[in-house]
Length: 469
Image 1 (cartoon, rainbow, N blue to C red):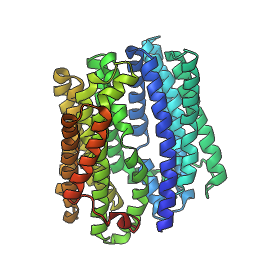
Image 2 (image 1 turned 45 degrees about the vertical axis):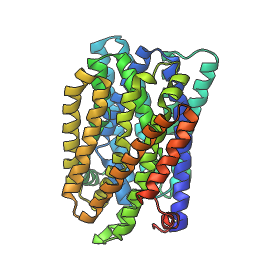
Image 3 (image 1 turned 180 degrees about the vertical axis):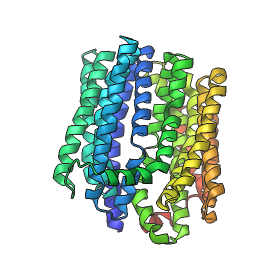
């Protein structure tokens, strides 16, 4: 089991590193190469498409992972899932295409239309990726996920060297990369997965799958709105320029959660086995896992805030650094809460408490949307960040209140302690050192010392990590 965990973590981490590095290159080139209006328009298109295709999944993606992890026959799940994405995907894009007849050649809508065509290809490939996660074939997942982003990065680097970064060329690169991901994903899954690809309509199986996924569908709708409502609202109420600034800060914030992205897919199958048939796992091991996650999460607060202004303003010619300094600080405070809520969500998802999870996301959405409606017109991008933080605080509080494992509520303490240690560390280092490199090294050392003093890191933790499973 230990060897399998390390192998899966290594494969998943490798594809994440490739994807995140390629994504960082892509993001940097388009944010610097495009003017803020164009960058804002393409950011709005991505926000809309991400929300829509997440909703169209109906929550079947997560249900598929859980069912496969619990040992159900993939041939009873994958054909039905494929039918679902084909029907819902084509139906949505037909409506999107017909919308052009009403709006004509509106530039922002044309951007959405082309980006939507590419994201439709990504949507068609999701059954293969989710099946790979459920079957714990993370090496296969790495192959399916890493190709398109790498090709996009190379294409955009070439365009940048030729001084041809335009909105039209960027859209062509993205759509081509999305088509490539579908083709490569389908081929690799056909060759490597222990299940054959077939599209087979079965009314009773589809109805059963939809019924089981309904609580998770509600969660999916809410999480989709939560993920991009602030982007869409800023783009509509403020301006494309303000959206460009906020989306830049938010994208860096998303990239900073790469360790969570590496860990999260592994937790669902593992937790599903731990809680299968009402088993009661070793809660001390779970609390240890949460403590290590919090230490990692808060470390990113230190790094991002310590070098945000000099690094970001340096690489974007002053476009996105200082203007986002307060926004990024507030967003980074969400990172430990993201780790904690993902941990608690995975526990409850593995136990089948989908109704409770749905209520948690309803509360989060309500808090976030009300916060956006009130705070964005007043505080602009900083208001969106505050509302986002408030939503995570509300979700964490609800999970704690509804927990049927009260001992796991103690995971809140490492979250609060590590976050406080991180803030004190980078603030203290900024006061002590004027040089950016000395400040960064100093803040890291101070953070590690504080973690040891507060016992959030202990000298025996290394051995415990390899004995988690």
